[in-house]
Image 1 (cartoon, one colour):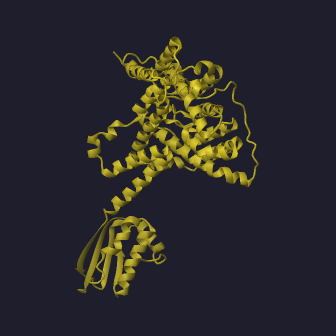
Image 2: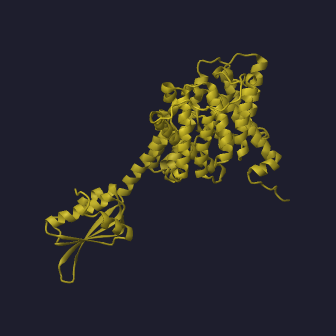
Image 3: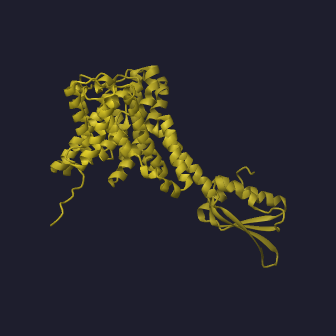
Length: 498
């Protein structure tokens, strides 16, 4: 008996397979439902009308479905972007906000074409683990306000929703468990006529389709001076979150994605969003986890339908969507949080085996991200901590061994064998490793087993040579590889010594 053929998760195969297509359609619907309260909340953070966030989520999702490089990833209005652009709205208004979004999108395209995606290889695994864990914590913390000062019935409803999400997949996976939980709890709320917080309580839903919007701002250098810093911050934060999310989905699905295309696609999507009066956005990690992990989607169909369903729900079925209890969406997001957290990373056995520096990097990423509520800041701090600890560790791997030999004429020579990588952290100590007072007149520094990486090392070697020269001794540097020799020849004598 032959096993059934497993189709590659592509749009073409999904359209040919009813099972795959059903998964993509239902995943898009679940994501759309989860997007609504998030988009409204982020609009409030940014200080704009809820329609601005909802329309931005629609245009971002639909645009990225065609333009992005990571299938099944969800892009929409996000909290990180809302925090960056909030001062523009507060101080200058909606028109300047839209101009900022347009410029930010253009900058993302430029950065994408310049190869910013290649910088992702410099993000260590420990930072990625911290990023994922911090994300899970932030997703959970975002649900806490919906569980405070609410009717007591909200708590059993959340518990029932979680039970459905956990238990249903063990019985059947025909329909996504989060969708069943949302429908069941909404039906219960309506039939029992109970009064609990609903989606409608989060903000007013739009009643019309989005239309083209051109910002009414002066085309002057003063306008550029106002919006440029926010646009650059928005571009960098959006790209960082989107590329990290893309890498996370790559790992979950065991597939590769085009990061350069993703960066450019995010930029074009923001430009499109700006021309429809949206607040801009980037990849949404929580909704992406709902789509990929909880619902099993793998293609661009789910991303596209998430945007389409979002528009249909808020414009055409706004009155119905407004009745969905927030408890149902809280249950979904809580389980997304639990599923996103890397529990293996905090097990005592793992922590005992993991190098202490790796744990410090992960913890610093988590702490800074949670305190700042900004994933981008946390990742940047994590990378800087990782670089610092790496430089410190590598610096300690440099060794200097002294050996006394005699040349052909019988004259004594001190030979210093240097082993390790020489750069700013290790070369600063190199100066102290020589016995300037007692060494003979001839000194040889053998760098066969080392490499010169920067100007700091050349400056240290110059300082060593100068100090020996003051004592009437000569120094010969040997064993340089080609690049080290070129760097030493180019910089030696032109740098200030110690």
